[in-house]
Amino acid sequence: MEKFKGLDEEKQQKILDAALLEFAEHGYKKASTNRIVKEAGIGKGMLFYYFKSKKDLYEFLAEYSLDFVVEKYFSKIDMAESDFIERLKHTSQLKFEAQTENKNVFNFLGTFMLTADFKLAPHIQKKYETMQQKGNAMLYEDVDLSLFRDDVDVQKAFKLIRWSIEGYQNELLHKLQGQSMASIDFDPYWEEFYEYLEILKKSFYKEGKRDQ
Amino acid sequence: MEKFKGLDEEKQQKILDAALLEFAEHGYKKASTNRIVKEAGIGKGMLFYYFKSKKDLYEFLAEYSLDFVVEKYFSKIDMAESDFIERLKHTSQLKFEAQTENKNVFNFLGTFMLTADFKLAPHIQKKYETMQQKGNAMLYEDVDLSLFRDDVDVQKAFKLIRWSIEGYQNELLHKLQGQSMASIDFDPYWEEFYEYLEILKKSFYKEGKRDQ
DNA sequence: ATCCTATCGACCAGGGTGGTCAATGATAAT
DNA sequence: ATTATCATTGACCACCCTGGTCGATAGGAT
Image (spheres, rainbow over the protein chains, first blue to last red):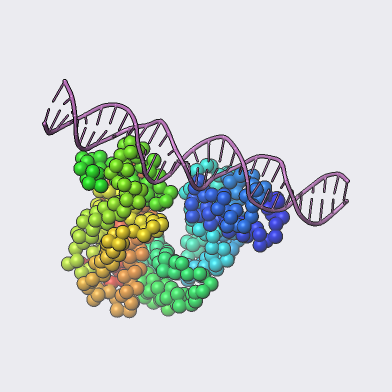
């Protein structure tokens, strides 16, 4: 594993990408080290020279991915923004940027824990749990509740707004499926997204508070 | 395949359940006929006595599932209900009932088409497409648009409401993961669901139209 | 010339694959 | 009682893929 970290950045990334993709698509058990080395363009032996086993590789990827998400996404969330929807708005942008920088990390983390049929090293397990916990807190902490209508349960409004945003993102993902990220002009989609956010404000915020 | 249809209902269902589950969990290619026969409690030979090949079995399941969903779900949707949210409400109940009757069909259809690495028989392909198309139309046709606020795009409101409902259902599914369906008292969850629907009405419908 | 390290891919035993088929049991027809 | 038909089984097949090993290299440094 120290051997792996001595590689040039580019080769490291190619191997990580291949492995993340393979695990994301097939889960831990059915992922194939043969496909990984082929995709990464290295000899079979090297993978087990860098990582002592498939499980070792998997745990390395887990820790790598968790660190990546914390550094490139979580740490950048602006907790000073007290408008819930505005916070989600710029959070979505951060997530998009992080995803553009390394798509596979997010795919991997999506299936991670669901497909690992062994117990992860405790420090990784813990890292994962605290990440989930903190991530949730960062969305809801210090939100200005006075913006919300008085006649709806704010906790429920939170959830409805999040589900709406996730729904939009999923639909967009599905619609753009197959196209290469680089070839897409995302501006119109961001515009559309903002329109949805405006509707959410109209719907869940007090009348007087709607336009800043 | 005519051989299969001559079986007693119970045995048929056991085989179908085993197969649907296996394909839903592993996709077409990585699904194992060995696991299917073990789960179904029949000898290996019988599966290929009833269905001439794995592919044959898969296509039978596809058609069976599509027919099931049409008969037990789509055909029961009440198009006379012009209140969009009310229609979604009773549609959710129908879907829940159909899912309770045969959970695996829905899981199978969720992965179906994504994992089949061959081209399906054209009549099945067509059946699938018309189902998707009709299913969508049945949600939006003859909806009373006058219920909605004038200051939001109704099409976008449709989508936000659907995403919200899907979000709730997904969260519930995730929360109840692992518990046996039969052991759960769903009444409180329906109550909670209705509360969310009331909030959606408050948010997306005109002031005057909110309560019945 | 001697080490050290990086790299490859043929190779391994083990396990799983979809599918077949001879054997057997069961049921009905003669 | 005998034969014919059908239902059912699981051992078996050739094949493929698995995670992991290891001897053979090559190249650079000493």
